[in-house]
Image (cartoon, rainbow, N blue to C red):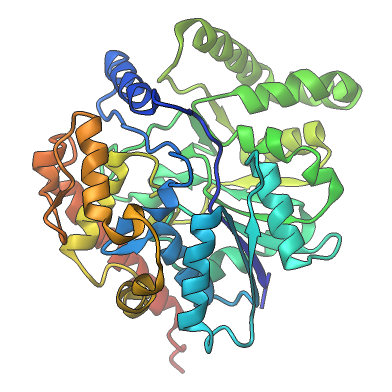
Length: 418
């Protein structure tokens, strides 16, 4: 058995406040279209206590899927970090699943008044009562279809590192599919020749050397935004220069030059879509470890599409909603999902995002000038009608990819023939 503690991060910053929320969302979507992006997004930004983790697939909030996934994992200690609405969800979940949780430590941690990744980690670590240097998993609460946490928690690389970043690699996730795969994303970097995106789940150690730089490391997650990586370079490279200079000159001079050019042009152009560098995973691990002072292992090996299918936008939600509506057995723990919908959700005495979510989501779409997501209280509108760029082919490919992953996992666990 590997790591036995997990933090579910169901908190994120207040990007926008006030009445301009929907205007900002529309402006960003228009900006992506002007830059020529084929798949633009209407982002689901925080609206007071209503966070994207409460948006419902088949009647179950995204955070509910993560609670189920953690319950059915090897984790003996589970902490969920969020606001008062996440607390209501966690309490209702505990009341229904308390018998399955009786041999676990299950806790809620408040996100704080100024949510941040470092704040979320500190709150989760405190709730788990982790010892110094103890490893744990961190899973963002907007990846509902990542169901097999044990694959993350059993990664032996954490034994010799402070953080393990198994990046989302296009070639690993979407074998046989042409770009953009079944889940539209843009890839600006490469690791060992694999086009990569930032991870949405991590293995970490509870060490001061890591906690001190976690915001910088997390800022590098957006592979289309080099701000966090540049911050590490600018703030830490001078002190590390005697050690790093020979290595950088011999191995990464070309890549660092491309990074600098990319960073400057993106600053002046307001965005970019070009691939910047093709890094060697061992080189990147060494460089980030040297700059940060923490042991960081970088690679791209996993093949679970659920790790990249995060819900950042209405478009993301529509695509995963269409996948879930087309196959009620899509989720690995589909019986628990159904139980959550019909036993847990009625326990929550919440407002519209809990009790009348289809109407709530349709109101979002109306304010954004989009067609309604839901037809009545149950059914997602045909994804082709809602967003023509999200085709039924993507929906079908997504469903098949998830079922193939489960077949492969079962195959690996079959006993050997003698």
